[in-house]
Structure formats: C-alpha cells, structure tokens
Amino acid sequence: MKKIINSTEQVVDEMIEGMLRAYPEHLKRAPNTKRTVMFTKAPVEGKVGIITGGGSGHLPLFLGYTGQGLLDGTAVGDVFSSPSSKEIFELTKAVNAGKGVLYLYGNYGGDIMNFDMAADMAEDEDIDTATSIGCDDVASAPKGQEDKRRGIAGIFYAYKIAGAKAAQGASLEEVKQWADSAIAATRTMGVALSPCTIPAAGEPTFTIGDEEMEIGMGIHGEKGVQRGKLKTADEITQIMTEKVIEDLPFNKGDEVSVLVNGLGATAPMELYILFRKVSMILEDKGICVCRSYVGEYATSMEMKGASITLFRLDDDLKRLLDAPSYSPFLLQQLQKA
View 1 (spheres, helix red, strand yellow):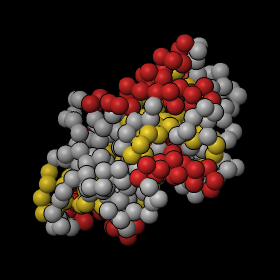
View 2 (cartoon, helix red, strand yellow):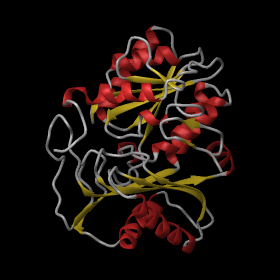
View 3 (tube, helix red, strand yellow):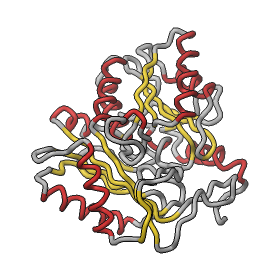
View 4 (cartoon, one colour):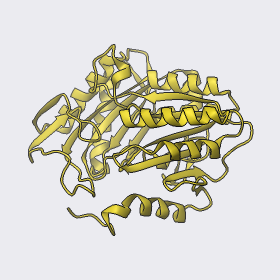
C-alpha cells in the first residue's frame, strides 16, 4: 500500500485539520466535535440548516459541499464508516437557527441508524429535523424499489437544490420537498476498473483483472451487475447511459443536467471522452443537455472508474441549480457561467 499519510489511525483527523487550516475564512469545526466541518457563517438567521455525513474517503463528497448555498455542515466517520450519532447531534445544534435542520445523506444502513438517533436527540432539545435520503444508483436495486438503492454521485444535485431553496428562506418542509424532488429526478450508474485500499486495512477492497471492468459496482466496492472484459469508452458509456435513460425513464423533449464523475484515479481526459458520448446519445434521443458537470464529485479514494448521472430538469429546478453557491474545497463557483 502506497499512500502519502503519517499513520493509518490519524488519516481522517489530519485530513479535517488540513481543510480547516486551508480555508479558515470559510470552514470551522462545530463545538464539542472532532470530525465535523461547518460553514463559518452558520447558523444563518431565518434559514433552515442542512447537514450531511457519511464515511470518509469520498472527497469532495461529503465535506466538500459545505458552503454558501449548499450545506451548513458535515459529519464524517472513519474511511467508509458512518459518523457517530453524537457528532451529528452536536452539528445539528450548531447549525440550527430556529427553523429546523434537514438531514440529507446517502442510503446506507449505518448512516440511517446514526442520523435517526441524532434526530431523536434533537427532538429532546426541541429542534425540528427532517430527512431526505439519496438513492440514485440504478444498479443497486430494480426499478420500483428505488428506496433500496444506494446514494452515490447524484446526491450532488439534491445538495444544490436544497441549499438554494434554504437560502431563499423556505420552511423545513419545503426544503425537504425540493430535496426529495431532486432525488426523484436523478439516476446514476458507475463502472469500476480497479479497487481502492482502506488505510487501516492495507488491502484492496476487491480484486479485478487488469483487462476487466465491472458495471454497477458501488463506491465501497459493492458488487455490480456485470463484470467482463474492458470495453472502449464509447461502449462503456452506451451501456451505462442507456440503463440510466430507461430507468426513470428520460424521454424525448426532456431537459437534463449531466454529471460525469471520476472515482478518484480517472484522468480528466477520460471523463471528457465519456461526456462526449453521453451528449451524443442524448442528442440522438432528442434529450437536451442544459447543464454539464465533469470532474470528481464523489470518489472512492484511488479507485479507477467513473459514473454517469442524469438529472431531469424543469424551469424551477433549473433556476435553483443556477442559484449562486460556493464551496471553497471545490475551488469553484457551482453556478451557471
């Protein structure tokens, strides 16, 4: 295992310390916590707080979406492990401005359990909470069982939409409704070419041949739907895009945003080759690409691979997607140019 770290025990804590030192004007730690990051301006009077969380190892997910017009705070656990309920609860108190707090995170058992426990603790403190759960991975459960699907890169859109709505002063119920609408309009599928190594384990999360790929593999190495010989970029894109289109389904005349996401060790050159083919497929089907995102939005440490997300838009969702937002960790404005 080759990693630029000091010790396997301190990886997460030193990562967070590095972020806080890099962006002190934008990020701070919530009181009484060790593994949280919150926006320095939170809590914002008159605004619903939004927090997320999950295992470390997926940057910029989750920590990287803390900022203006996005999330008010994030709690993380060890690599690929849920944050504790206590840290989530303390973060909830820290971002609450009196209008309640939305929990917005991916569909994983440990996260659900600990966020639910934190919600119970918040209720004892008379803090209103609501929950929206990302479940965009079409490979992880069949159509009709969307509530059983994993949340992966597509949760980016829920962060963006919920964050924009909260910034407008919407109620907790309204922010949740818009987050749920974004989740319902989002579909993702990924492909893995190589594993990653959890520092504490020191071994790859799975094995795969040098000339193999696995369609539908999860960001923790969960089993996919098809393993076989490595195909060309166009062939890989065709398989994934067609499955995503069929699932919602996306239809002729729809307007969509496309997110082509690298899993940690995929060159930007390759991501743009994937996007090229996605846009061609959508154009042939009469589906209009209105907003495009290409880069690393949800990784799995050094895993080689990518995912493709489609987000169906209407006029309201386009306005919210274009609303000003800033995440210092991403070092870019997440808004329309």
